[in-house]
Image 1 (tube, helix red, strand yellow):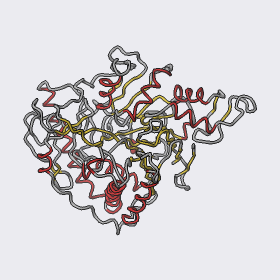
Image 2 (cartoon, rainbow, N blue to C red):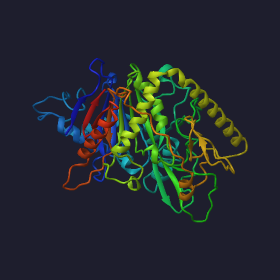
Image 3 (cartoon, rainbow, N blue to C red):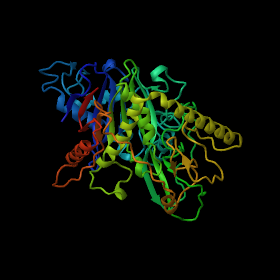
Image 4 (cartoon, rainbow, N blue to C red):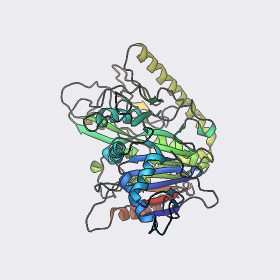
Length: 515
């Protein structure tokens, strides 16, 4: 059921709207990850809506309009008509047909699709819809270089689907934008520095996160196709930001991120690990600075081979402290009955709370003693400069031509380092050697326990006022308690103990949030 909710601070003028086209993570294919985001300031003008993921798309827009368009439209109610209720309230429609009006939304109001990662439950609606609804200008897919490479190599390749892109002699219905991880200092100013404009009133910044690992006896199977050249490549702009949280690195030509302890991969079969990359987007209203943070699929840092969530929390913390970050959309695929070995790169309530506690600690650090953050920033800048020097050496020596993210380190030939020290003083087993692989036994022997999180009991609900919207819930389709109800109940139980102060909301298909 389509529903409009104002979840913002009553003392502030609402700035952003998020429409939930798909809230689930399967197995029902009509309800998989998809959102629409717009600045309320833009109204319903051409290109004013940004889609974040599109596992389902046109059919979901149609369903919402079928539920909210008035009866008698075109007969008792004259056309054109301005909708007065539902997620699309205020939008003018020109047809009595919900399908026709939904096609108008897709053709004219949505230009850009922000893709978190290229799994089918996040892209299938976009892929299928694009060929059937050509417009006067191409649709833009924006994402990390690894995501764009996956589209080029595995989707729009004239095998799985026709090449609808404007690269490699394609049809030209889709254009690619390769985003710089962490943003580029060449873009934006002030608080908006590093953000890329995607509509007149919205800008975005993206960070990579880990979506678990694939286990197979294989050599690294990510695409080796270059992603440097394309319709719009902003990944060549080197960011001034340094590594955030962990020491994970990016391999921009592939959605797999090999994790290594310095042993070069060989052709012989052995048990090895590759890490899936996903991403998290900060989406910002350009006028009042209101933001939402929206994750793709993600796993907890505490069990990840490539922990990167802490870097996102460090970016989010000052925004929460100053009140500009209104909500976090984050997945919780399973309830707490799901064991760690069957999470497949996803979260449960126990790990959501663990991540919120990590975020709360960062927020409290900002509020109590912001000056102490400066030395960390210097270490990040030093690390960034070291990475750039390594990249220049590799480029001069004839290495690969793939764009390097500002948080990436190019493959180091013959590296034998076994660990890297984070800015928090403890070791991480993840290395800056994305071309090599690591056996499970080697990884297990290299794990160093992470120091416990500081107690939140003296922090006085550091996340008070923050909305945490749960997405990607996988329904069990049995006669028991619905998965979404179980997850919310468990989250509230954990929150009683943690006292972070955030408000949990489990999203529904057709729901609309205003912040």
